[in-house]
Every structure is written in structure tokens, then in C-alpha cells.
Image (cartoon, rainbow, N blue to C red; front, side, top):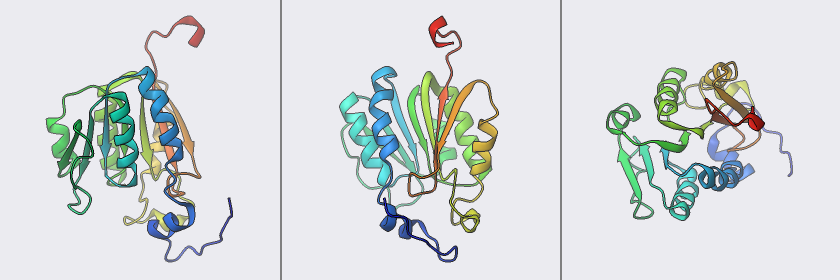
Length: 195
């Protein structure tokens, strides 16, 4: 991969997308593995390039995909029969959501408080061994920490790294170069060989 120096001013996701491509390769590769071992629905908070990837895996695994976004330009038609799109805020979507999840992507509002509320809700609905992905958790420059960029969702990653009820790993060079954190919910009683 060619490294291109970029000034901190005018650094936008659209620009990064042109430089690095879609960058969802980690989530794309791991989704199949996760759904092979934990077969429940997928939830996506914030639609975008990730929607097609998650729809592909949901369709193959024969599980439901729920996508939620407040931006009417992003909320088009469902991509397959098991795809439900909620047009509105995640707070309202959460009030209606009842399913258990195997995989969740949180990538909408990048404010710590909102992302934490979304994470806390879906972590309670996540199967043991299930995964939550968080986007924008390791931005490459401080200039991206404004509300129009990655804001302060990186603080949620820092909090999660201290917890003992989950495993947390961050890829800083993926997902539009903004970082992708993978959180795995630990099993309460894992077999002795996995302890």
C-alpha cells in the first residue's frame, strides 16, 4: 500500500475513501467467521459502504439485518428480504428492538455519550461470543476529533479496553483509516481449554 502524506486541514472521509478505498476488509473477512459460530441477527447503526457487506453476510447466513440511519439520503430500499431499514434516530430504534444479536456495527453519531448508549444497549442483547464493531475509534490526526469527524468516540474504546467482561482489539489502519474496534463478549462459563 502506498502511503500518501495528507495535511491535517481539510481532511475528510470522502478524501480518505479515495486514498484508501472502502477499507472494510477486516469486518468483511470476520463477519463470516462470527456468523458461523454465533447465528443471530446483525444490527447496523449508521448506513454506508458497510451496509452492502453486512447484507451479503446476513443473506448467506440466513439471518436478519437491521439497519438504522437518520439520514434520508442513506436509507434506501432493503437489499434482501431479511433486511429491515429503520429511518430515524438510534434512540427511537432501540425502543423497538427486541432481538438477540450476533454482530453489531456502531457507526452513526460519533459523540461519546451516544455511542456509549448504543454500545451498552446492544451489549446486553449480544450473544456470548458475539461481536460489536465500533468505527472511528483511532483517527490518524487530532484534526479529525471535531464533531464533523470522529469526534470523541475514541474515549469509548479507551473505556472498553479496561473492562474484564469483554475482549477489545483495535485496527488503527482500516475502515477509511479511522480505526475499527472489535469487542467480543466473553462467555461466562467457557470450556476450560478457552479460559
